[in-house]
Image (cartoon, rainbow, N blue to C red; front, side):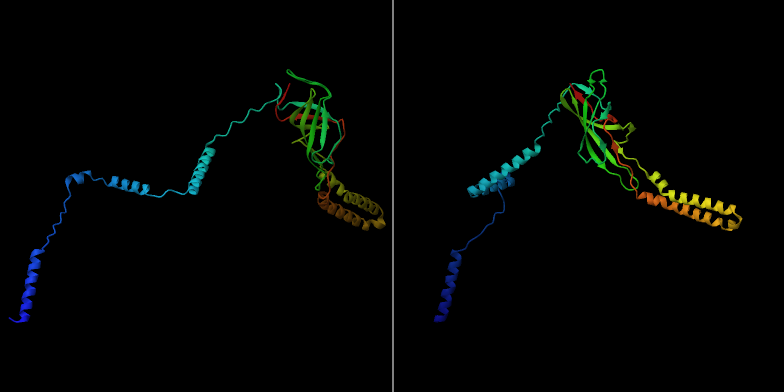
Length: 287
């Protein structure tokens, strides 16, 4: 036997011996035991995993802990603030136990002059000339009512008169000042609407005055026409003055409403001692 064949036989024997001594078998068991399947709980496994993960997290630094605590306190305080119910308002104390009902009126006289020259905030005073007797109270003669000018203006164009608006603020009663809310319904024995003391509006009067020139000219031309017509030599000229007077009075009548619009009305001027009437807007309580 040659050496080459000997080598082949030797290698073949070696391979056969190795394969017969080192054969491995792998059996895969794909079944799961019944008791393991019964005790298996997927949700419990997830919770355990979360708990384990949380337990393994590192502890927060001290500065972050303080910030978290302060943030929690702010949120808590904000919730408490929004949920707090507002305190009930304290009861209003009304001085005095005798009521003077709103709508009550008092006749008084002015203690100073009143005019549209007075500016806003000016003080005006009135007093009663006679006592006012009611069932539960008496307002003696000489009781002083103090008012305030809350609006005023002088006469304006379109023949608008001046204006004074007075609001009564207080009354002197038994050495004490009783606050009031009242207004004026009569001034200088004239009815006042909406507490507005107004100067006379003179538009119609002014328009009549502005048309006076045309009427005077027409009367003159009419007289001249009559004189010319009475004389035979001038009779032919008599229509011309009449025609001229008619033109003047017509033009003046058309223009007078426009010219009167730019004129002003009368001032408000009421002397001291004039009669007024004061009416209460709210209830008043006195002793």
